[in-house]
Image (cartoon, rainbow, N blue to C red):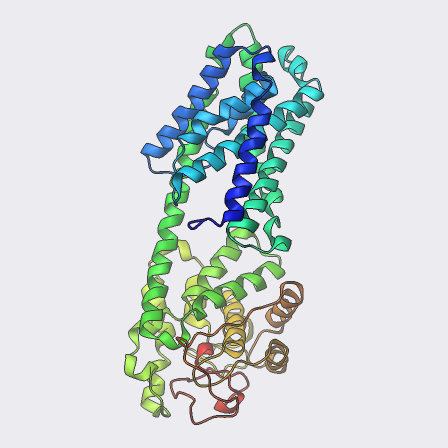
Length: 453
């Protein structure tokens, strides 16, 4: 959305008009203006705090917005969202358009939540503190809030970011209810206390614990961003040194993640294996560039030097605690089940599971990526080669998981040779020599190439 297409601007304009329609009955509504002003001020204050902290923590004012949806008529509830949204921190340009978009989006979502809550007689349940009945209308309001945000987010992804329509909404709604439900419970607590004899002062006591939670969440995301920056810097250094395989590391990370998900691993471990795939070749930074870019065959001495890159990589990352088992994958991703791999010649289950995942992902991407010295293999041919080598070089379970994931999600091979045209598939002399142990099934003739090193 940096350079916003005209159709996306029209979509934003439509959302703004819809939000204005939601506000239009406002003068006729029985509106407690001091409540609107106080809630809007709280939203604006939370956004200003996020802005001063340079944190784009989308959702910091959700409890206040949802409290407004449970306390106020729909037009007034929608109005609560506007000041904070128009003051919100924005990481990308055009800032003004993004703030207007966010204001319209939140106004529509909060207005929809208030309408659903009112239709289910939620305000009476809140006023009477009628539990557990009050949870039903409040839960429906939260779902309406999530649904409107999801629909609008998917639409802007299609029009502004050109995401295919079949993928734009995939996973958006399923990721929303859990975190927003927590905000909804806080909003319900605020609304019930607000209607109690203790009034707004008691309701505001809900916010300090939420602020602590926001702070902890922000710290987690800052740490995560630092982790990502560390990995990105290492991968960029490898890409600069060995431009022939640019993009290879990211794709191996993606394939490793696909395998891990297919095996049913939890999200934290899936992320760790993505890191393992991305960093598997970081040891190339310790290999002389002349060997990585050598066009002729390697001498035995040169081959031994290149085969040290897993150990170099492990030395580089072993002090990075958040990588966990990814460090073992960096060290052992060239081991083979039959013991003929390197650096230690491990066999079978003695090879760490993370390394067995990355080995399959690495070889698959090497086979399906076009390089300057040979064209890519078709995905079916690469899969057949992996199956042929399963049990000797690769773990059959990892191969099967990748095949199932490919059947479900597909794969897009990419050119990673700096745009240099590839030679004919059968040109072997153009193959670069720096490829020890990189072949699937052995030998230069199979054309897997150096990406599987």
